[in-house]
Image (cartoon, rainbow, N blue to C red; front, side):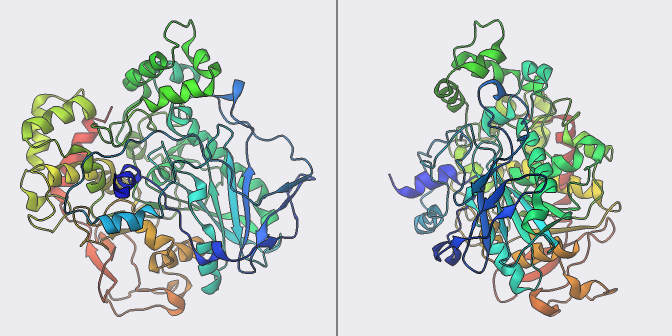
Amino acid sequence: MHSSLYLLAYLPFTCLVLLTAAERRAFTATPPVLLDDSDATVIGSTDGLTNKFLGIPYAQPPVGELRFRHPQPIERYASTYTASNFGPFCPQQYVPTLTTVPPTLDLDLADKILSTVLNASAPQSEDCLTLNVWTPPNANPESGFPVAIWIHGGGFQDGGSALYDGGVIVERAVQLSEPMIVVTINYRLSALGWLTGAEARDAGVGNLGYSDQRLALQWIQKHIRSFGGDRAKVVIWGQSAGAMSVAAHMLTNGGNNEGLFRGAFMQSGSLLPLGDMQGAQVFYDNLVADAGCEGAFDTLRCLRYIPFHRLKAAMDKSPGFYAYQSLATSWWARADGKFLPKPTYELAAEGSISRVPLVIGSCDDEGTIVALTSLNITTTAQLHTWLSTYFFINASRAEIDGLLAAYPEDPSQGSPFNTGRLDAPTPQFKRIAALVGDMMFEAPRKAFLAATSGRQDVWTYTYRRNKDVAVLGSAHIMDLFDMFGPSDMTDHLIHFVSYLDPNGLAHQTALDVPHTQDMFAVGGSLLFWPKYHSTSKTKLVYMDGSVPLGFAEDTERDEQLHYMDKFLRGNPVR
């Protein structure tokens, strides 16, 4: 089998291993870092350009009695911890390979991407709650550098912090004279982190992955000064499921973020158009049956204590993103009555949102990758059945008819957008790509903008680079190549972490800057990026060609997206 088939099984929501020159340089040990409120020291490694401290545990191992329980802090670190290697990945959900790919898909490009994608043979362990810290080489407890916390994507089922080189960001920040620290974190995945059903809800153990992330944020508040960071200058940042996690941390606790962060940067993700855990009971019941716990008096206790290999085998029977049902998978973040007392759409509508500055954006063709699972859907009738069976089980036939009328079969109106009748390997592919991309990414982005603009500083963008990639266009995850390049997108992140403004310090006093593509800021920042307002709705556009940045009004396909938004509010995904 061609290696790109394997790649495409891991492409959705995955994270990129970015092999940089920094990883090929020789590293030596750093001076010891003394953790605050502890006698323990941490020794990392340095190449003179960045220091890195890898695989630091932030919670007790969630194994045995602590499986399917909230993470417990480490009471006390002892002695010296050598932080020279990443910790293991949290157990990954099995993702099957695609059996068919469109003949026009660029396999050479796919192979190029493959070299940066998750290695399925990477070490995995339930004992996986670790984090990694990258700092400038001169960092010390008095440095007071701002901090970016990266929450990886992977659809809540796959991925890991080890796939990202935070040193790329730190090196670029130093070049811009805006030194900062990057922290990447692991959190539990698949059923271990996102168990659903009435049993999990009643036991208060839903959305454990969010609890892991929250504990990591608290650990960073306690210890980041030891590494040279300022705990009052933390920005949380993520992509895909990581961006959805950022939104969740803004929505939980009535919007009170407990001082854990002062800004948010969200790539391809925000609100989740899902309902509550009880509506997904079938997924818990299937896991119990597949794990051999069906006859147990306490099925949750049975799942907690069975050997890991049995639980993992049962988890892997759950459908992944490249099964026929695509994104209608088992292990999502759903309203659990605690971390998310209500579905995220409802919390946002109520104004339960942390009032911090934020950047939020998406790729132009978010749905093309996941639409590759639906190549055997070739008629409207088949698409109708697919939606009613897997996504909107409580929607009426008339409601789904209305949704399909809003997303016509005409390929010129589908995704990849603005490509006419090209990139349509099947009659329904571009229609499905548009529909699923809007459902999970674009309509939620617009809803989050509506809930936050006017309350806090907000910037938004669309990523339209790589539009010429056959079938995929500007697909989900494409922006990660730029963010960890580094590139102009990296600079926008760094400026935002430093100043809570993606334009950087050069524009802090700008009042009425004209929207012109030849406006460049000092120190590497390109083009003044205006805030989003409900009246102007200006967004930045990352583009290919000689003019890499531009502006557009964020009103494209407004009628279609409004219909999707209204539909999702009445018919959340199961």
